[in-house]
Image (cartoon, rainbow, N blue to C red; front, top):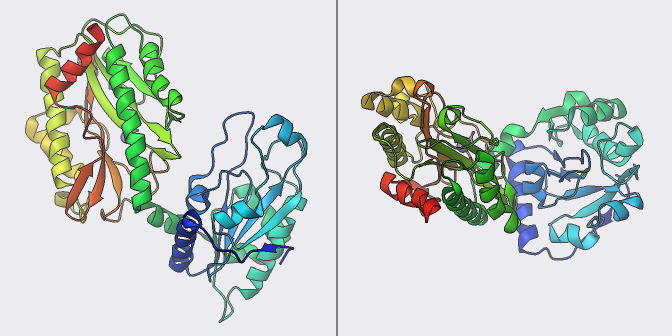
Length: 427
Ligand code: GLY
Ligand code: MN
């Protein structure tokens, strides 16, 4: 084992939370796990790997977390060049105190000092020396009666390739950690539900700002600016590229806003989500640019809302997001059946739900039925390009023992209430 600082202090509440998650992970894999941080890819906002964040709470690029079967967790941290402090003002190498606060048992300096000021993915072998030394020990234990049969990881392909060159026998010992991680991340704890509520709250404010901005002659891009102002001013950022799509463009599912004027009587789909403290929201509303829907728009709007309410009334443990073998308990099939009953099946084009959490389309195996702690979207839409009309309504639901709680209940979705909100643009 490489030179490590070992700690024996008491870990705090946050450290205990990450430790609990890491212990659950090795319990589910039955073998040691290597979890890797993301790398910096240029002078842009660094985006940490969601799973690394889930198990460590650290925004550190290029770090590696090794969890032994007994839960002993070692953090490998990259070594900064001195120029980093000049270029990345808040860059401070992880101190032992921080590592202890996040529930680690030991810290090891990882490889040679990174060249330049950013922590980019390095191909050089010196970068992986310490981790390779640890893995060599694990490989020796691999397959022995007292050792694990596999080392679980989702190593970046380049890193895996480098490490396999450095550690003989490693390749045969590697197993995919992702299914185990996804299963754990699916079930949100109370802390995560609180963070999702915060992201949802800010997204509802952004939706209200969008409704206030939408009127004929205003551009989609101006509406985007209005809603994203709410995110930026609150220290959040868009969880995905915001969608503001009017008229025929509302029938293109991921149309990003452009400097096109909204028409006199368009439906405008606004699909956006804040990312706050790493947790994402995803909420869609469809507004009438005129302040009221036309009769045809109202007909389609009411159908979409009915489908959403129907699916929301069913969502509970034991149902699937989609299961072709059990259509009566599959939210997708139930949505489609309701849509057909209303006579609009030909305008249905996408799925009904996805998990949401640290990622907006969060990890989780949809072939396993819903369970308490899942957070999903329910997002029916109907798209009629020949009529330049698209409507989507999307909310977030927390699956509890016997149903689902809507995290975005406070944002109106009833047609009359949406019209009232849309009319705020004319006040
Ligand atoms: N809200 C965008 C999507 O779920 O794809
Ligand atoms: Mn969605």
